[in-house]
Length: 124
Image (cartoon, rainbow, N blue to C red; front, side, top):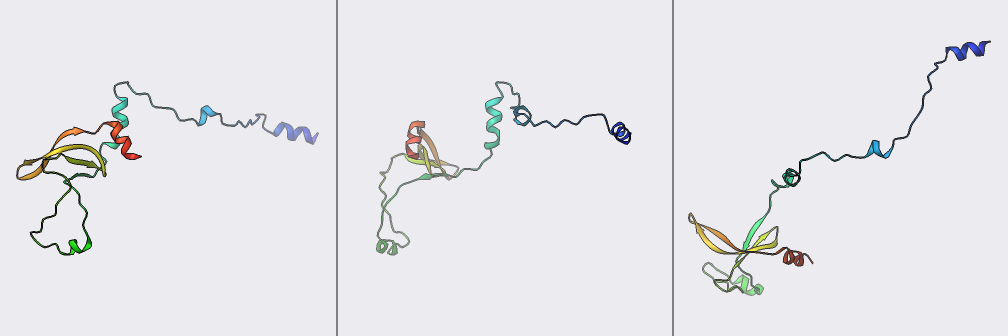
C-alpha cells in the first residue's frame, strides 16, 4: 500500500531525452536578393589596407661599390628609360604604367592590367 501512495505522489509526466538532429545544429544561410549577394559578400574586405608600390628598376651592386656611393652618385638600373613601370600590390605584379606629374608629385598612369592567368603564374 505504501508503494501505491509513492507511485501516486510521483509525477505522471514522462521525461523523454532526445538527441539533437543535424537540422538543429546546422547553420542556415541568410536569404539575400540576387543583386545584393555579391556586393554584401565583398563589403567586409573593401576596407582592408593594401601596400601599393611602383618599381622604377633594379640592379646588382658589389658591397665595395655600395660603400663608394656619395651624394650625386648615379646608380644605373636594368630598365630602359621609357619602359613601363611595374605596379605591385602586396609585392605581386598587377599592372604596368607610365610616370606622370600630378600637382608637383609623381603619379602613374595605368597602361596595362596583368591578366588573371599571368597573376596565377606568379604564385607558382
